Length: 283
Ligand code: C2E
Ligand code: MG
Ligand code: MG
Ligand code: MG
Image 1 (cartoon, rainbow, N blue to C red):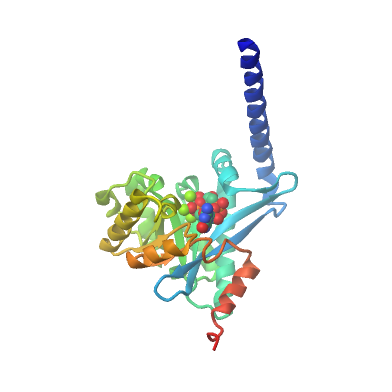
Image 2 (cartoon, rainbow, N blue to C red; image 1 turned 90 degrees about the vertical axis):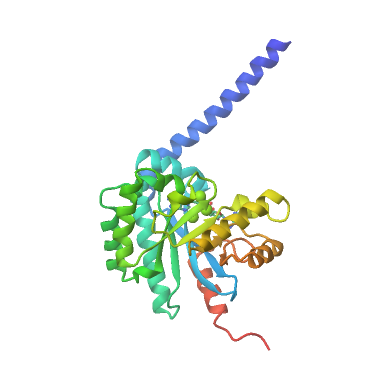
């Protein structure tokens, strides 16, 4: 009897593994054509200043509408695209589209709106990454001060001298840098000081624990204090409750991003959010 159970378990696991590897193969093989077929688009999630309640910018997030699989989450396909190298082309498309759209909003009167774009490790490591970014800025006419590139701790800790050189080259033009998912990596205070960073984004795993978990609150406070002492802007990711927002305000966090204010939305809906805050406050 035990043997039977063992066998059926084995069958179950191998079927699961099969399903996962088939899906991975499907993602791998269709990534190649996804750009040509225009299956990607961007959504935008506002970043809100906690002192004024106003949208100061947004993060651009890629979406993939696959003809058979439906919406495929970036958490699933970005790692695959990293492995296959497709991330290079996808990343370039994301950067250009985000800059083009932001320039468009500037032209519509929303001057100073800042866009944050995620950069993958492989994309950043290309020899000519800085040149590519400068070219996109020229082509789209976006003010470089309004582009923020999101890097991760693990990315910048690999060959830090080279990373600093690339960052310096882009900073000279005006581009900004933030550290995404901050607190989940292994960077120490002394290491962090070496990089020309403008902003820390507190990882949503810490934000989530505010109020419910003493450690989560403590880590969030520590990151805010660290960021402020280094004269960096601090943004909390994944803010879902009013309680979390209050905690962040009380503890000196500069801005927030999360479902509480808005989910990531299509460009048209983001434009509506921008228009809403130009209306005079209700009487
Ligand atoms: P990320 O850069 O840390 O982006 C934040 C993620 O948190 C987004 O997931 C966003 O939809 C989600 N989020 C925002 N607010 C909340 C909230 O209040 N609660 C919860 N539970 N989640 C929230 P998304 O869009 O699925 O992206 C996942 C990850 O995929 C991103 O994490 C980023 O690492 C990667 N990614 C997305 N777009 C791109 C891209 O264009 N290029 C690269 N290289 N990576 C990307
Ligand atoms: Mg990000
Ligand atoms: Mg993040
Ligand atoms: Mg992330």
